[in-house]
Length: 92
Image 1 (cartoon, rainbow, N blue to C red):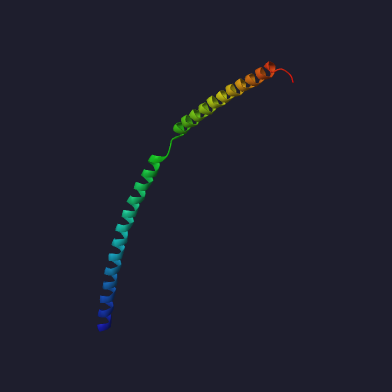
Image 2: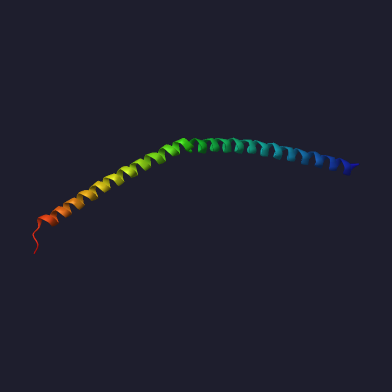
């Protein structure tokens, strides 16, 4: 009878320890889940949407086109200056 009582006490104690560990682990899991969801929300707020990306790409494209047109005008002016210089200088 004493062995059965010792086994019953040990099983009860083990069950108490396991229950404590389970509840502690469950609380930690809930905390990690909340932190993870908070982080996902934070990351999602930083992403650009498709329309925002489209507008940004269009703006960059317009700026590149403007720079290309400006460089073409500069190139044309330099060409005109060089051709006028060749016409005005007497042959040697």
